[in-house]
Image (cartoon, rainbow, N blue to C red; front, side):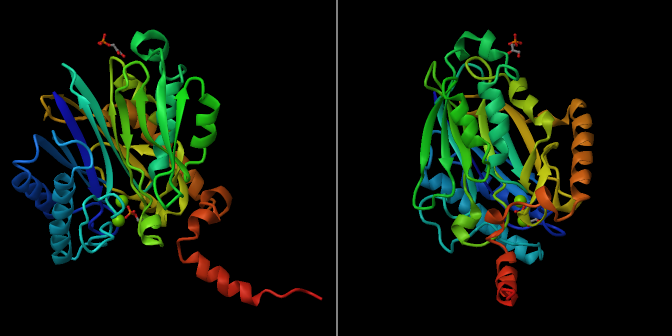
Length: 366
Ligand code: 13P
Ligand code: 13P
Ligand code: MG
Ligand code: MG
């Protein structure tokens, strides 16, 4: 059976700053999707990571289907009313357009979706990150899909031995999708060259070269490209099919033990380590640290099992301690050097006005 998995997420308001949504807000979104999605959806799962609410859906309508996107847009609009009534911070933050126009892409919410022939056993992972941007997945995806040091399956599993095709997007190009296709392993150095620049080049999807099946789908929106100014970080979602011809679940999770430094955290303007957290985790230290959650599912005819919380395992407690220490260490240097993002990323924030007014006060000494 051909099944589509779609996840659409947005920040539509949260309690106490950019921390986490209210129970009433979540319930509003969940019951709207449940009631209005009855004919459209096979199954759905609503969750939050930091201040972002994600609607995960299974259905048979393919990717980019208008009614599915509209369902989520309307659910977020409904939620925004509640956020306003409750006085939540940043009510409707990610809804950047006034009226729905066919597809939530380019309107603020993040979207990742793929369609595939369901396998007899169909395990997949749903990642959601807050206080960072889509480039945060570049390193884990590189390690999981091209590096036998991380993924022994590239050597051991016949279904993976032909490698994977990466579609990488230049997210600075705003006049349309500027993409490149590169094949691992032969384009390894080219893939690494692009993926090191996480603010510009982002993995959009990954495909098996043995079967042609899609393995991964990542949301690639840059909110400042839509709004023209800083309106919050892009807080990306990602779907990854695992096992058999794809990396094993453990091979996908392992890279997150690094807690790599990523863009984001306070005012979206810093470099801070990415912390793997349990499902339904909020935000704290320095509007961060950037967090990532991962729900594992199996499905049959599009019907989902319950979510398993992959980062709840005791192993990740040590990782969280390491990431906390990295975060505290980095914060000791405040605004200095590598702690903040380069000017190219800050140009969407208020710092430009400050620099402009200072520029007029500069004098050339004679
Ligand atoms: P199973 O033999 O349990 O399927 O495990 C294989 C595997 O992929 C472990 O990483
Ligand atoms: P969000 O993008 O998660 O709303 O965070 C915005 C921010 O500036 C936090 O400091
Ligand atoms: Mg927010
Ligand atoms: Mg957020």
